[in-house]
Length: 114
Image: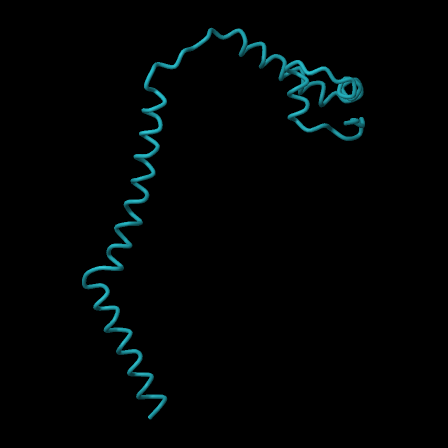
């Protein structure tokens, strides 16, 4: 990919360059574009900071706990949908709805057809 100095390369390409990819076309663009050069400097600083952090180990079972909590939240949202669906498909609601629809049908039948 040839990078023109009047067009900026995508941020992904600049970030890859900041993290160590060697591309002459990006270097050339950076010489003429202070905006992209500043972005690459900032990304290099962030990368250096992240590399300076100590290694952190995730305790065993954490992933399972996170996914369990996510499933629990999703089920909370689905319970509301299921409770509304149950109400609409069972019990007196269906009977009342059928009665209302029958009344509307007979009203229009009597008014418009007779």
